[in-house]
Length: 258
Image (cartoon, rainbow, N blue to C red; front, side):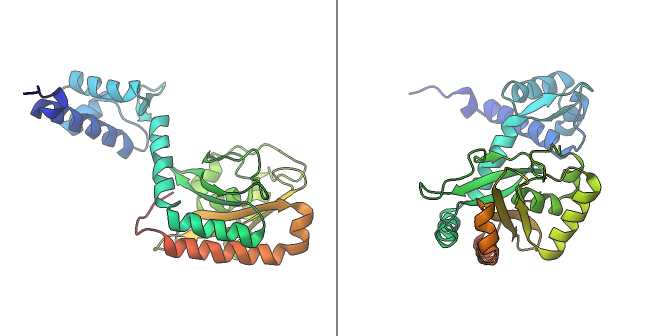
């Protein structure tokens, strides 16, 4: 008869539950936690809490800051990205994005939030309509300069305050007041456009994906050349608005918050 592993034993199961409890304790604290906080929440000794948090730290689930408080680490972000891909980029939704690519004759991007950051959850492209070379599935940068990024910033004021705004082109919006005005316009029109703000000779347009409660949880966007956009902006707007509405309707009954 095979021996039971530690994790199969009552003691092993309890250890796993405690590790997960420690992770939950860190996740629930906006400003991080100290070992004493974890010990109190789990009703264990400080030594036990230290060992539990140590397991999480070694695997990258938590990090210790200079203030000696523990916060969520990058591994949790990867899990969040996986969740976004499973919740947002489901097979039916990927089919909608593929149909949008065919209609727009352009690559289509689906973005969402993970732990308050913008991520690209899926890209529908092809040999004929390749994606922007700098964009990949994963955490997005330069959100002040992309159409989907600006739309997501408009939905998350907290994200605006901690976003870097380098000038990628001469058209990039870097000032606080111009950006606030741009985000106000996006909230009013429920549409985001950028022309040569992210890259020269490139344009993008994005529309919001909404949850059942009506909050913006993502965006559908397309990218084309600036010249192409100038000649068919109305057509591309119809594609992204229609697809964003379809994606919103096709979402599983799960609220993924910013």
